[in-house]
Length: 272
Ligand code: NAI
Image (tube, rainbow, N blue to C red; front, side):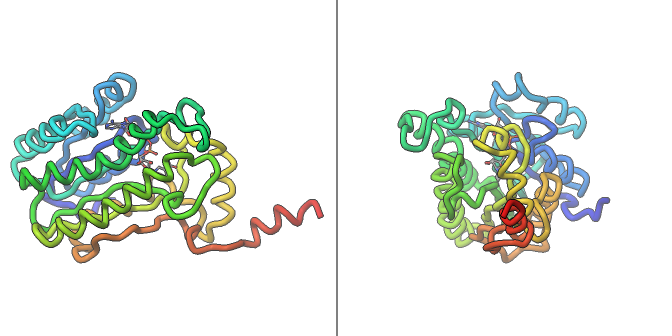
């Protein structure tokens, strides 16, 4: 249902690969709420995924970019302003990838070239995105920038591997850039820490099926799904959150503040 929360706003959504992607749901909801957007993903993802189908459906232009390449990002911000007809009001960074996870390297057997890539793709790209946008003065006063993260940034989760380090860096970049972007241009920067979600990236994390079930039982409201995450992103892009910045916002059904639930305790007591 549309409340026109983003009426007249222009946005860029990075990272919609297929219907399961959190960015896919954000793109759909942003348009439903009155925004006009561009989409961006890697040329490879555009071949393998369904980004073009989403673009057709939403009448949005897709601008290919590897988010680790500054020139590609410059192209995304330049072209988006051209197509959308002005400065950008909101940006979603929904990008993550670890070659160590993909190749099954354990945390005590990391390939350091892979680690460089994990950090560049999953965290430093967020800095690159904002540095490019700020230098080009491409984001409007009062604009909102978001990246998606996970609680493995604060606490250790078996199987999350070097993505945990990437998420810590991502959140730190959100805070540090949030200060300078807020101070100089009135742009707010936040990260949303989402429940485990069955997407292409999510499925790559070791033991995801069991973790989903555990998190569900540990969260008083249950796991937040991709659609609900997208709803939260829309609120953060809207004018209803104008003074929220430099925050890591948990969107996890309460998981982050739980110690033990009866649902989890029952699992262990069942066989006693
Ligand atoms: P997804 O696999 O649908 O999205 C990941 C996206 O990153 C893909 O579209 C992929 O093409 C893009 N990408 C990879 N390398 C790139 C590069 N070099 N340049 C530009 N784009 C690149 O999976 P999902 O789950 O929607 O992931 C979105 C974000 O949400 C990621 O940051 C992920 O870590 C985060 N997140 C996911 C959770 C989950 O359980 N699925 C939980 C918490 C956060």
